[in-house]
Length: 325
Ligand SMILES: *[C@@H]1O[C@H](CO)[C@@H](O)[C@H](O)[C@H]1NC(C)=O
Ligand SMILES: *[C@@H]1O[C@H](CO)[C@@H](O)[C@H](O)[C@H]1NC(C)=O
Ligand SMILES: *[C@@H]1O[C@H](CO)[C@@H](O)[C@H](O)[C@H]1NC(C)=O
Image (cartoon, rainbow, N blue to C red):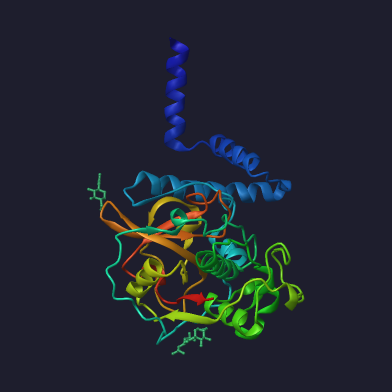
């Protein structure tokens, strides 16, 4: 009796004051889960950052929010480190002040999910520490447009875009935009497959081989900046759509639910991450987009996330586009 009472008392004290041993215990189990190894000096630095991240996550999850957060592969990084390695490091000016998308003006369904309509989306990929999100948004979109048109789903090459698309204002691991990447594929007359030109997460010489071109673009459709209804129309009546938005610190630790933020920017010159809208819906009165990310399938909701729809949340309607094949 006495021992178990003591144990209970010490457990609740630990929960209240965050004993350093407890932080270290959490850190060590996270390290083994993600196979992390540090030098003795780095260990203490990463422990501190991890503990700060964990406190923020616990605090967020204790509140009343439309999404939850959790520890993941990025939990030993500060947001500024994360931004340098994973986001578009050069500001992208993506404004399509006047797009060329013509809305259908048809009645649209309340929800759509291209993942469930057929075999149109490749498994979630992982960009690694390279600001190449724009290439994954591009291949994800082109893969789906080709698959919807032909019934054949073929994984396409991000690395070709990283290495070869510079003339269209793209910058390899330092950033780019899907609309500019579609332009590159159009004028280059082809994109190779993932198998023929595999991803390695750093920029090298262009190794494009025209005879291995596997996917083609006939035209690029840009949806007018901030026309989020145009995006809904395009996803409902055509195919998934590439878009960019502003990622801020809490998004790094997103787990599930509908992401919203009051911290992010919403203008065309502040977007720092490109992704793929594969559907939309509504939960508990909040309309959302269903979005494919490129941070591996263990991040977020099996590699996907939901973000609030209808408010240009974090600039998501600033620059959206898709290819015609
Ligand atoms: C949580 O937030 C929602 C939406 O703002 C609100 O409707 C609900 O009443 C809140 N619940 C609590 C327990 O505060
Ligand atoms: C972005 O482009 C628009 C239109 O070309 C221009 O008006 C604006 O000044 C640019 N912004 C930046 C930050 O370059
Ligand atoms: C679409 O956007 C790309 C990249 O910004 C641009 O080069 C192209 O001219 C745009 N196309 C149309 C039809 O506006």
